[in-house]
Length: 149
Image: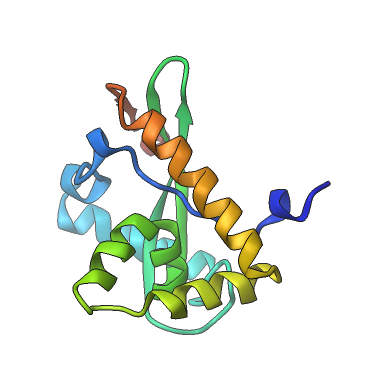
């Protein structure tokens, strides 16, 4: 199996029609706080990907059905700022262009966590944006049925 397929930290770009559509906007502040804090506890208050003990973010995990055009919530994961920004590297690029974060630091984090070189990052980055471009042309439905569990 190719090393690229075994990445611990991956880029997960949200299709353009789904930007600004997230669970925090659907749930009350109290309900979101409960989910967020549970994700941190599940990860022993460390980043679930790189293991650093730092400020955490609750990241929504989504699956995309490219045939039915359904974005399905499948869980939550506690992530440090760097891992979270890699997941949303398109947004990170916008922030970096405003001088609000260092994109080189994020790329170095990706390389270190995955134990790969810059070329592996570039391949994954380009592949992720290729998928994003295709998905961004579609109209999506969102499935929150995971919340019933």
